[in-house]
Length: 362
Ligand code: NAI
Ligand code: MG
Image (cartoon, rainbow, N blue to C red; front, side, top):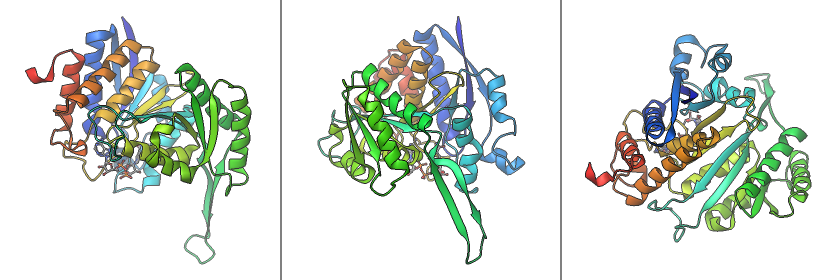
């Protein structure tokens, strides 16, 4: 039987509440429709590790994942009010993305049936796929702070846009559009104000777009694009964006498609030289952590993206249909969707739906 090795890092906040739902559901999917086995290697890294050892993960943490021969990584969110956010993010998530060359952050935003959007009349009309650059740009980590605490203090945070990095993410967006029957790619830019990096981004976008005459291409300044996601989301199809722009736009996408608790993401190394990483778009949600009420769907949808990446398309489809069915039925809803159900109840409902049993019978 086929076996997939999965590195699992539950992370912080709601992470340890939602990640077990993903693992449990994955096992159900594997049993019911997979014909494959999931071999979980858990790594308890994150803020607790930091508080006891001074580091978010061991110095050889990334090598440990490679040594485990992980086919994919399932990660909970990282971040905790007790530790500065840049320490947690740069101590775990960003090194994973950079070292494992996960230069594509694929974030579908679809308004699913049964989910209430804050936008009136949006039902069935939001289906955006954001392709976010994930290893450089504004989050390259280039810069520094000097003369700390003095009146002369200087902080510099430089954006880094390489031709290789820019070209490959834009090309991926067009190839994705072509492969998935999508008609248009919109580039998020800010070339009016950022006359070096973003004009370069536009130039590369135009060069790549010329190679895809079958796909409509357009660019839009990111501020008005943000407004367009709210005002006319149905006019957007595939959106390609730099690291920071994609980060911000996809939280807006999550909001208009109903909840932060629904939005999935796939951090992909398309060459498959390194394991890809799957997690929700959301953070560790400290405001609701420990209450057992976080919505596990973001990580479950991310798990479906993972199954697709692992070549288990049938299982990915079965999981996605189960999520859609539970949402459409509307009986089980976590508080972010306006209900009172728990994380576990939502996970169980989806596992029952995967098994093809109607929720009402339980
Ligand atoms: P957040 O996404 O954690 O929370 C924003 C709002 O969305 C909160 O009201 C929260 O309760 C809600 N929410 C998020 N996920 C939810 C879920 N699954 N179910 C129901 N409601 C949910 O963003 P915030 O507050 O800006 O960040 C909190 C921490 O997470 C920070 O330490 C930040 O650095 C970290 N972070 C980590 C990320 C990651 O690991 N990928 C991504 C974003 C933030
Ligand atoms: Mg974000």
